[in-house]
Amino acid sequence: MHKIIIGLFATAIISGCASNEREQQKQLEALANNRATVLSTGLPLEEGPLSIMSARAKGTSIELMMIYNQEAPGAMPVQQVYNKTLSDYCSNQEIRSNLDLGLSYALKMRNHRGQLLVDALITAQSCQ
Image (cartoon, rainbow, N blue to C red; front, side, top):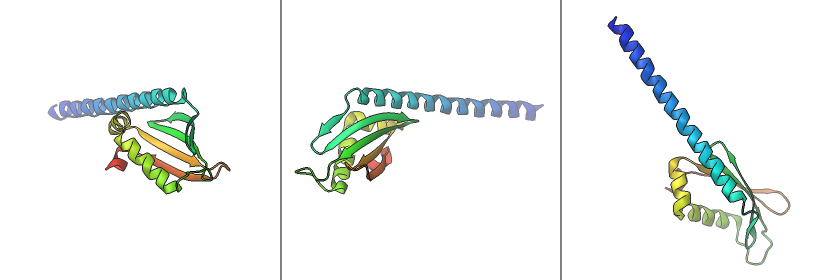
């Protein structure tokens, strides 16, 4: 009898934990969707040779599609642009708090011919 009660109790605890994880996942997905929607309302956004063309949520990630004109006056090498973007994301308080909650930012940067230059995922671990 004791084994049955302990087994039922253990099952209830495991079910509760799984349910809590699903709820957290849903909340993170809703937050990602909200952030992507907010970002997309101001697009396209141009900053020198870099243009953010679209933002969309994919699970707990916010996917940003960018176009980088490497031939524009003052254009930096792609790796430098990525390093600066990473630094900016990690130092921006709002973005960093989203990363710390478990969101990620998937950056897809293409040149004006459509060639993929950067395909990177920024997470809280990226900021370490």
